[in-house]
Image 1: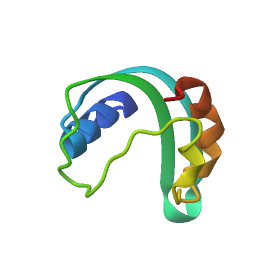
Image 2: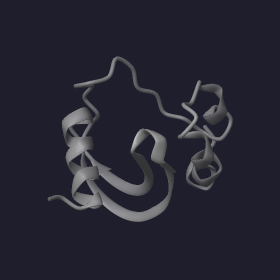
Image 3: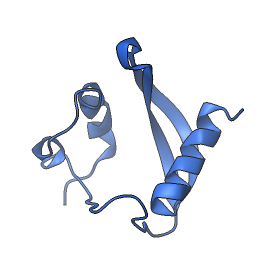
Length: 88
């Protein structure tokens, strides 16, 4: 059974072809009604993203972070991400 860091590395490898090094777990949202636990991690990544399971990718900065239609479970994490984003 894989732990959370192993699952994170596997998922990003499968979905984007990136090799991750998890640095810090920043928080989680629990949704028991959907049997869901969503965690956000600060990581470093090696490689160039390749879209294996997604149709689009974009880089965000503090000015554009809130411009996307985020799912409800993702929204609590947006303020945590701001300090790690750079203005263009």
